[in-house]
Length: 311
Image 1 (cartoon, rainbow, N blue to C red):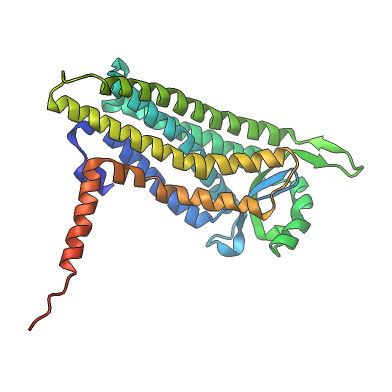
Image 2 (image 1 turned 45 degrees about the vertical axis):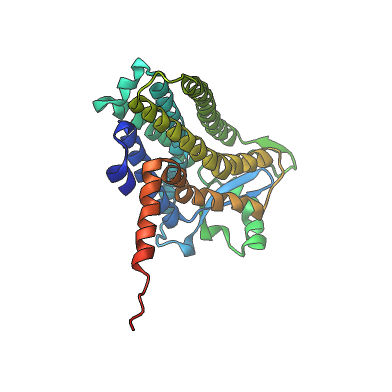
């Protein structure tokens, strides 16, 4: 945030506010992740995001359930974040008249989209995928075998696709199917927006770079900045795809196929926690102004730390 506020190039425009918004979002996300300390676990056709009460500063079930819902809401909000950045980059690269929607008070329309998406995701987890007796009975023994925990020691949100009945038959858990389907729609919509506008932006930038000596230095500098921002954005989006989309999608897919991953599903909790820490790095080291300041800062620090021997 210091780099964005103090070291951003003037041509960055309104994108600076989106970057600050993203930085604030990731900072709060990290704090919530630290407080909640979620653990993802799957067993047969059950997947849960659970909180071990003894590791939390909160002991009330309803408080922990709300915090779990808020954590899930932030995950959902991140799905909307990535698409907006690509849309903005595309508008800038094409000089679209819609770019003015990112100026003034109208930028709040774009800022509200992740909040809206996150609210949907959080509501699904809190109201549709809330704890149930069916899940409690099915995973109680497995929790003891895997973690040594009783079901009363955790709070969770989760899905149970194929519910085992007393007579040995199975019943489809429609609440779980509906909730996870909505989540899948959000994930796929985010990816479609990213790839659609990302490819169009790339093709447009490549065409711009082919233009010969007809631009002045200011124009070329502007195009170079847009190219830097786009490269940073591509890298910045690859990180959540690898750390967030892919692990969660894998757990959901295996659970839907009634193939549990056991403790391996917990890897996704770790990768998702890494996202806020790694996501800012591409912008910090690809955008020239930021990179120069960082390298210059450490160079100065290194020089100052040298001790000159006295004779």
